[in-house]
Length: 297
Image 1 (tube, helix red, strand yellow):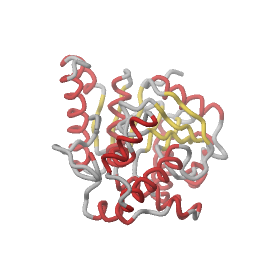
Image 2 (cartoon, helix red, strand yellow):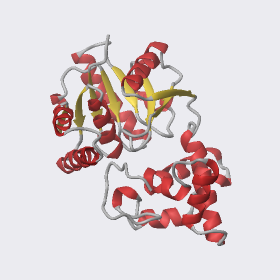
Image 3 (tube, one colour):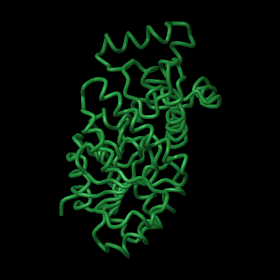
Image 4 (cartoon, helix red, strand yellow):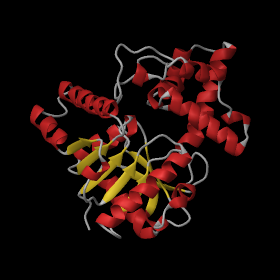
């Protein structure tokens, strides 16, 4: 059965980005959050992103209106109705994800039993652990989207111990419908992207703190020398320093290797609320706060 309507739970940067990209590819989307403030920020984030596309002549005003009409914003889970697929996009807190999926399964199995595919947008957590409180564990799969979701064409597909092939195939159908390239990964800590990018960012910070080179020159060296779209400092700002810190803490705890040890500089910036592009300041300063960042650095 073709995927036509999805629900996204969690209207943060990732949830808003997933909702926008899904709607841009013709899907009907219900975006659910716990707070009115969260929904307001998500709506503004999506509109800001679309306005950038308008300025670049990437879309027309009519196309913007059509895209927004495909997204329903709500605080009430009961407003979601019947859907083909559910995406959880809350922060990477294992207990919170377990509880949410337990509640969502009760809700949707009453409404459309046996039909819904469940997806966790997690960057680091094992899908098998997230599914612990679910009855239909075979219908949960991980899809790790990367921010900004509309711009990045990759999604990591993470299979749990119980995940069925039919569930994986269904999730890949969604990924391709959204113009993404899915890559299969085992549920090892950090998957591919976080596992590789954290040591890169950490090493760049050490080079900077040693006085080997400036942040700007390190970024230029990696962009021009190795064809990176962004250098490690600009990349960390795009990911979000709170996210980078969370990935580092998780990987260091799970693997115990010093290359994943959280850097004090990242911790200090995150503590002060300097999280990168989304707050207007991180390793670099940005003229305006952008919640769903797509600018080039």
